[in-house]
Length: 426
Image (cartoon, rainbow, N blue to C red):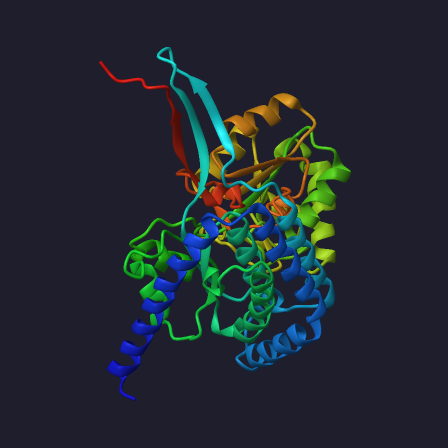
């Protein structure tokens, strides 16, 4: 088959997927809450029951990824274990049991002329999800879209192809049980990158929103090329600030968790800022705890003077999302200086302050414009499941429509229902 024929084939495949998704969207838009709950409850049971098959599929993906020499952070995102499958099952169950957002009245009021106006949640329609190595996105995105009444087109990376297919089979069991069309959830059957290009064009108007989940290169491409709205964050350049009022034990424990729990997730801390007044008491204990877990320190002059094992940070370090056991560390003169540094370098994803001074906390919360702000808590709570959303389809750092973890409510729009009794406009 020639290159032109292959491209034509991908174009035709994707066009059909788009048309089918619109059919699925129409069915889901009027599906009952019970149908959607049944679909997801059965899907969760199927994932649990077929975990051996899912783990076997993941083992194929892992073997192929290791043969390519993929990074440890990437392998960690790709890996499925019994514990992680337990988490996927629990997430789908939680989403199943969430209140159905579709048809919920967001606001209502009466006009002097007797008209009663309601603002009501409605599905977005068809959502395209483009992701790389995380097989759990298959279940999270599928479940959130179904619950919110949206059809979903999933385009996973080639590295997670077998894992995603095994999970989709379980999700389709749920749709069958609920008597919903399989077009509600489709996994792109090809790893050809041309399929991504077709999705970004909108599939002849059949995709309403694109959500990318992956590295900077993928997200940048989506934002540059998409002809439909995008919910995305370009990178997770996350900061932790240790205030002069910080409790030492909290500072150590929270920083260690924020950086080292999972270094490859978007909520992992990448830069640590420490107030100059606690350098003598807090800096070395925090750095020692990080280094004991294998974290490399890249610090400014004050940090290097206090910690001989640290390396000298460059300007590039303040701009880098490492996704690895590396953290850049800077000593700042004040909470204002910390805020200024974050404003200059942050990707507006997640930031944390460790402090006991409520004035410093309120200043941090009021003046930093990031999607998620935490006080005395790990940045790794930047996760839809931890917010009570069951899961997330991504973390949005834009300011239009959705921001932060994108759950079922963020996957809806709204319409107005106006009820009258014969009123006419003079």
